Image (cartoon, rainbow, N blue to C red; front, side, top):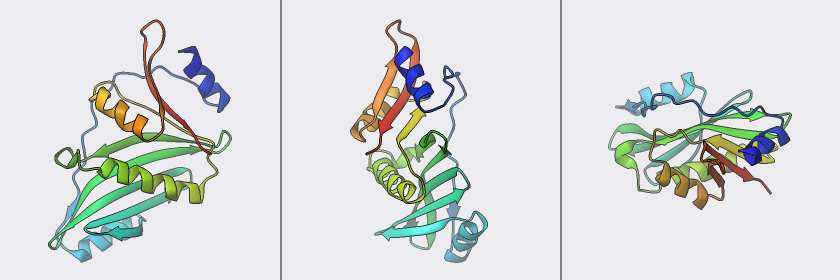
Length: 174
């Protein structure tokens, strides 16, 4: 745990042991036509960054809060399949991932990786980032999530030498 505490201190952040929260469920968003989807994008101030096949990648910047999401176009419908939210800490040049979630029936298709890669590219255009950090809530399928973040180049701190649960992730940026 000391290593994780030092990591947070290095980036000017206070370490707090994760609290057990209720699971966050995926918030369903579906639009039955292009007009309602366009209205949603406008009201939520999203920008369409790219379209790749049936996938539409969006981002949103609200001062220090940055998010991205993916919608899948099926016939005339637009269905949200994944999203990621983060907070930028300017003084430490750290981007903290607060949630990354993929619609349960869409998992295992590589959407989380596509979303993260898109998110990182867009975030680096907006912020000077030395590190990305985050917490893995321990009420979720942690082994799967740990492998996901490891494959993205993160270090995962599951527990300390005393077995205390940390569930922290960190990736130094180049």
